[in-house]
Amino acid sequence: MGTHRGDRAVSGSSSPRNAFALSGGAFVLLAAVACCNAASHPTNVDALFTHLDGLTAPRLGVASAGNYDSVHQLLPAKTTAVVFSGVADIIAAVLNGSIDAGLISGIPSPSTGLATFSSTLISPRGMLTCKGAECDTVVEALNAAIVRTLNDGGAVTAARANEPFEFLAVHTCKTNQVDRFPFPTPQPGDRLANASARGALRIAALGPYDWGQAGNYTASPLTGFWPDLYTAIEAHFVAGMGFGFERVWQPTSVGTMELVLNNTADATEPYWTVDAFYNNRARTHTFGLTCTTLGYDSTFFVKDTTSLAAGGPGNSSADNDEVSSGGVIAAIVLSVMLVLLVIIAVAVMRRRERVLKAKYEQIGGEKFENAVAANGIHATQLAAVALSAQSSV
Image (cartoon, rainbow, N blue to C red; front, side, top):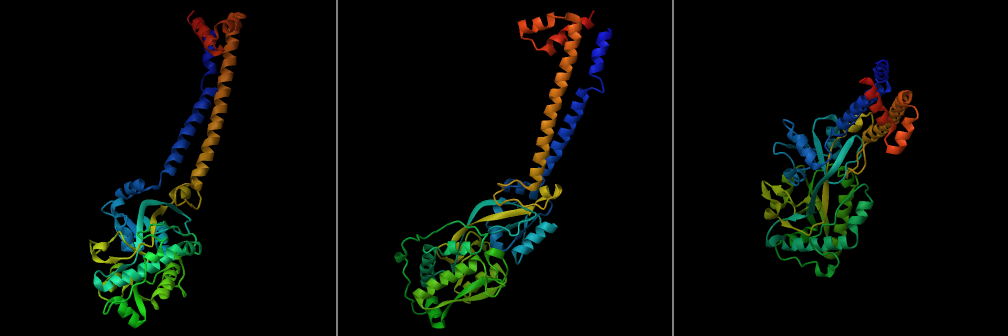
């Protein structure tokens, strides 16, 4: 009975087994905290829907109503679009919590403190004109200029000059045979003829606002991708028609499109969203459309609460391919804890085996090693059996 009590003392409250159990509990707690931190903000569209759906009145910051229209089907119906005059304002509102998420065409910059991810939707862009015979030659002339601009790499050149700026080639017109898109002859009384007489084709422009690399229309001269692409299209238009563009400004998307309908302008800027609405009607049902200029994979972004919780500034990648700084720290801590637990476990097992072997050798002497060699039984298992038999005597 004394030996049995001695064996129980080995596994008592002060034994390494208890130390291992306490360390394991700490590991589980740490893993739970890290897991909660890692999942504290949305990292994809599905998670964003769930996050916004859990709010009473979710708010999404956008640069225009058209941006919201192109992704509204990905969001809860109760989501309210809040239109801002610039990308910096949307970023600031996300960071200070006055809106729940932001959406822009392209990549937010700077992205410090933000978690960004793709909308997974490609939104085509082009120039809207009026419908009907009065604008047919306007469409043809703009198509000729757009195709030539894309053919000579105008979009790529503009993007490289305004990094970071990303776009996708979404073309409704072939750009490798520009001779199939000739510049037309204006017809008496149509808008192209009036523009020729005036000396300029009037372009309806939203703003002026500052959209960062996409376009700063408050700067003088204008800077950014879209102003550069506009200039490249205009250069080909001048070469083909003998006159250029002039902007007509309006502060809202609806107001800008109405400039085209009421003959105050002849076409919109080349960044105009095609897959959106005008007064709840598809834009392609209300307006004429040129060849598309490109496509956008719009980007959602939210506050990066993971890295904030870990004490870092936060800076997730647009494709969510990079792990945030908080996630990296948590992963390192967990890895170190796991290694320590393995070491402790091995030490506990070896110590207990030595204790049990010593006990058994007191009982069985040389029979212990012979039994192990003959039966392939682990020393711990054999010792435990022997001690159990002794205890029952």
